[in-house]
Length: 87
Image (cartoon, rainbow, N blue to C red; front, side):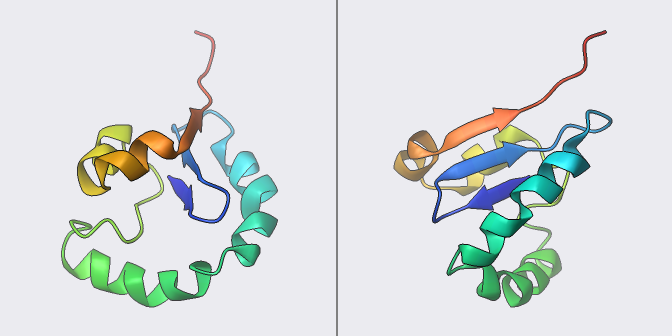
């Protein structure tokens, strides 16, 4: 999952769907996000608490995790997207 506060999007990385390529394409936007530099220490704190703080989400976290951990009005404001495979 990739959350950008500056660009107001939430990318849900579904396994085996090319999500790594999408993350690589979105990576330049991460450097422009003012919160990006705070995410490394926040990720360490979040991982110690089992990612219950919602500071940074694990790569393959489910959408429900973001919905439960983020404020409802902030979550509704985000542009949310994912890619899936055609079975």
